[in-house]
Image 1 (spheres, protein in one colour):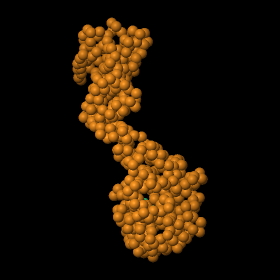
Image 2 (cartoon, protein in one colour):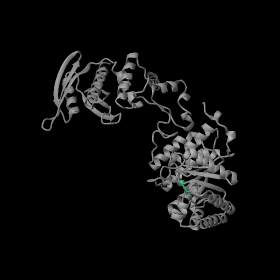
Image 3 (tube, rainbow, N blue to C red):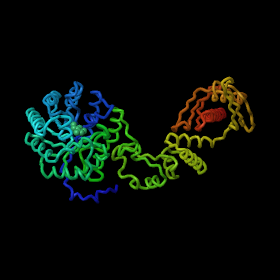
Image 4 (tube, rainbow, N blue to C red):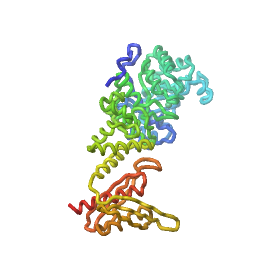
Length: 510
Ligand code: KIV
Ligand code: ZN
């Protein structure tokens, strides 16, 4: 894999010796509007987070409910490898709740910006400092590890931020956290703030960034370049409003673009993302970096050609690195190479003529705006292969009539053993009427019964391609399956039935 690491001037950075991953999926992630996890779900996610190797898991806000204390306590009792953290405001009751949950690591916060001091807390700077110091003292009396957050730090006057951090260190804070509470940072400003803090404080620095401007990952990486020791992250970037820095983006970018390996097993990232998406009901957009369905999907002929020769041509990392899968998607941009590779993947061998027909069918479906899944391709190619067999019956024409008064009527014209025959029949619907007409036309040769009928829309939209599977039987108990795809449901049904009847004839002759 070629990466950009060679161009990275690490000597110009102030990288910490070790970067800690602090996951807050179960706390800030759960603050995603509409998300509420049960105790059991929190336990399952915590187990997976620990297994993947995150250093710390913020499991919730114990003071907020009995359920939060219960889940925190249960997770702590599992004795996971990750450190278990509880959130608390800088008030005794919140700190007590963290202690009640048997946790040994507290993340305590108070708003420090003028907006928070004046409009939320209605406290002076001195009062805010006093509250923070008292809380840290109190938590330290319990022997807790204390991470102190200056909420809305990035909109706090710099001298006041320095002051409160100094006091927090004096009271025994083990980590200083810099929350970008409403996600207003840019990489340049992050560089300036974190460098300033790093140059003035020896205490480990943690960063907790929100993604309101889509910059959380970029800002977190910049903070790490400037000496931050710890990144707060969430799986899938879940969190308040537009979310937090995403775990997968940070871990993979550190590995692939910086050559920095944190403790996390990257190969489990995709399955973790899927798992959390399922439990929270928050599905990732297809274009989400690292874990989105399209992260390793390729459609255009030029890209697929490159990928097939060397996957690095159009992929910055291998999907294996994160436990994802490469996907060659067929559609209007598909080239012959992509189709050949797909057919090979499914061991489908077509001759040149058949290949051309399948290729043209895919292109024309693509031109109609459809995206062809593997399932669609298998159906199309199988039907193409099936059509090479000798057919005793072929559809020549079809006429349909229906209305409010008359029963649906179908007039079907078939070529049976070279002879053209036509019959009309009624039924409960056009499909039923057509099948009745077919049965009438072939009754001299075969008494056919429709045993099963299944229809599926295999591409989305009202003009979806319909795939019909049928099973028919003859009077001797022979059964055969027929299948067809067509944009017209009635046509797909008739062709599937005829496919199945042709197979029954073959079986009878065996
Ligand atoms: O975004 C934020 O400021 C927070 C605090 C609780 C640290 O989540
Ligand atoms: Zn937050």
